[in-house]
Image (cartoon, rainbow, N blue to C red; front, side, top):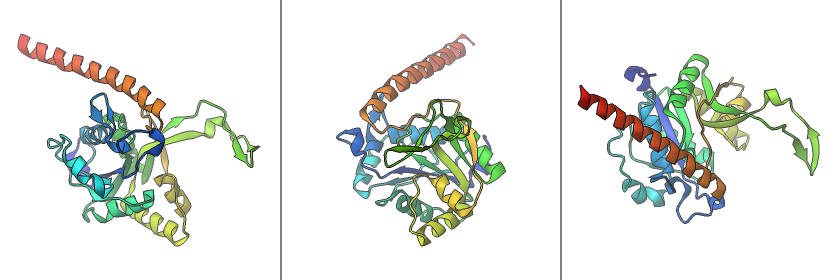
Length: 250
């Protein structure tokens, strides 16, 4: 999607308020560098470059606002200043939603920890959400999945029906707000945003990710992301150099 009028009605909440204890890094997870750029920088730039997002709202621990200001993101036109997140994911989403102007009709919720998401996949999931009301990026599960209770297998769901959820997760703003209200009334906390819509009875479509979109949670995830990002950045540098050479030849 590359329609600025359509993009103007879409806002992305970039959730980065978590500390990321499992990663074992001295920095909060959103600010951990991967091949020279922090995870939140990479997330914000991919959202911007997708052409499908009109407003990018970071949601952070207020103690990290000064750290965020030091990032070199002044050239991202959709970016606005951060708002403070909460203890739970839904607290951060609620704070982000309150900050959005009334003209925003679609919300893309993205984990800052998924800094390698591709702009193309972001555009695809936004386009699908516009068609169906809500959509998420996801990856087909390769392994056989077991549901376990008290250390014993209770179910083996059909593998062809199992997907690993990713972000962004994009949905109508009114659906998300209604779903959050219903979850709060029942004291329910979802592990992702689509789960809230499921509880409220709204349909959510799946968009299969075409490019790697790992979530950085543990030290081994960071090592893999470094290798992947270095490869992607080198390829991008080659494309830029080739384009410049072509312009000089003309």
